Image (cartoon, rainbow, N blue to C red; front, side, top):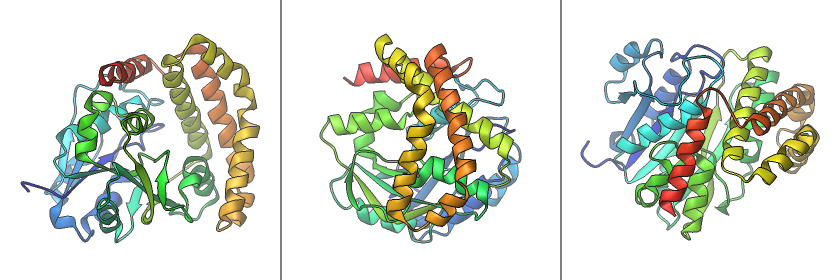
Length: 326
């Protein structure tokens, strides 16, 4: 394919608390293969050598670019790390050739018309189009994880300009990404990319019709709690490394209040959306436990400034990109 219309970079993120494999990746690729623009779409899966059963998928999906990345700087090789996800995204984006470049995660299954809706939305001048994200498995723990991750992107989603998008379901004009390449060329950090695009006067919009379903397989409460802790600590460590000391101290002092604030905000959001209010109330104890675990991780991240043994490298790369772009 010399000139693909759409590139889709699939990040394998389901390895935060377990050994990396392709259990989630296969149904994700199957949903992408059935898209209406499949013949003009390139799919890129950046992965590191430890991912199990990748060889069989290469045989089944010969048109997919399985991009092996053996020199990751932010992968500890141990469970409890997530910084390498953003590095893998950057590697995938670096080789993407489509006029539109989308990002999804391996546990995301796209709706049958997903690519058509994104391409249609990109007919306008917006630099990025974010889609809706729904829960795909009707189990209490899946609902709780979904509410923590993606409740704000649940339909009904307001169509039009937005300040935020999710890197689990978003598509960028490649020319817009290239204009801020120093921001993401080492580590793709969605908040930094969004800030850079908006600082240049570019618009981001939401398209409710571009739907992706979160399809988390085999969730267990202990691993889900641990994942929340890891992600909370990673978020805070990156944020702390880019902030002034006074901001870091402020965040650390008020981190214990986060569970109350986050649950209250989610409750209000679920009430306004109404569609899944019953599921939200039924899983509220689980959701609250996950939020508390995240908050503990966030507090540790602010206090130590470290996500894991390589978390500092990720933050430094983001900071370096921000300086170069400015």
